[in-house]
Structure formats: C-alpha cells, structure tokens
Length: 119
Image 1 (cartoon, one colour):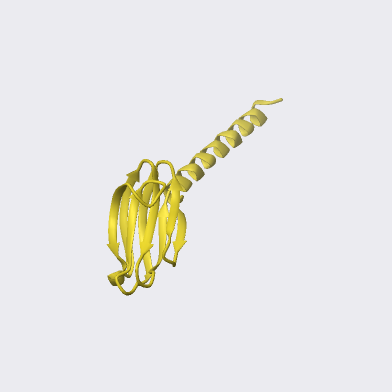
Image 2: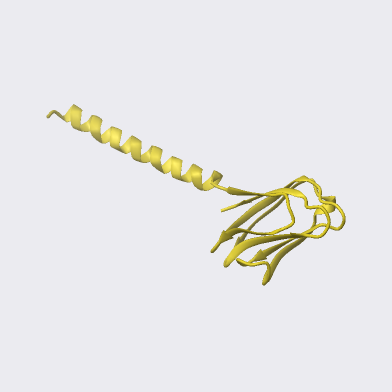
C-alpha cells in the first residue's frame, strides 16, 4: 500500500474525529432538555445533579398561582426560586447548578403554561 492511501486514511480518520468532537461540544452547548408544565402539580424535572438553564412562561397563571423550584426530587427542601406566575410572560434565565434534583411545584389558582430547560 502506498503512502498516499495511508495518508488519505489517516486524514479521513482525523477529520472524522474532529467532526465527532465538534458534535459533542455542540450537543453540550445546545443540549438542554425540556419539561412542559401546564397544570398544578409536583413535577420532578430531573433526578441527580444538573443545571437549570431557564423557565419560559408561555401563558400567565391566574388567581395567585405560584411555582416553587426546589433542589430536590420532592416538593420540599432547598428552594431555588419562588415565582409568582401571574405576572410572567417570557424567560427567566438562571444557569445555576443543582445537586439533588430539580422539582417544580405549581399551586393555587390557574396554573401557568411553562417550559423548563435543564440539563
């Protein structure tokens, strides 16, 4: 086998490795998962450690609706945020780490329509 074939294979292997590395970095950067919440409930978004990127309020809640965000796998424990959903449209960006899990409890009144982005 000549040097040209070996060099071509090495180049292809290096190019594929570089592309795979770029894809991993892009996935890491864009890799937020989402959870949609539109009812009053206790929603475990993620178990274990992770990052809360943000919460987008697509539709306001009504009648004193609140969303409590916990660093836990239950609707109790360390509070990350207490949000009055009756005056929110748009995205709250957090980009903060949690250690135990991410749980959101929506309660009272009419629930907001929201999307939670995390990883």
